Image (spheres, rainbow, N blue to C red):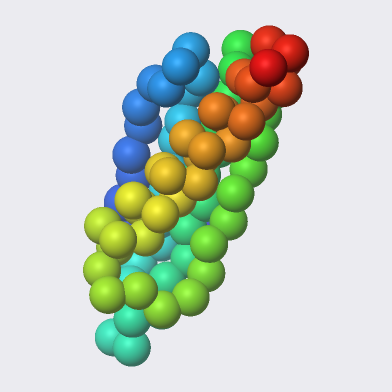
Length: 80
């Protein structure tokens, strides 16, 4: 079973975004993932693995990636 050491959940433009981060090792390596859901219509997953200065930096990067995806998905569905 996977243990998550940090999590962030927020709503963005009608989507639910969940970011989960596994523990940071002594050498700065971590892995995490974000999931963006729009009701029952669409779910997307993003993964991140690598060295980061802090867990908050990685969470911020995953949250930014999820927001950018939502922005693109909304534009493509609105016809813009």
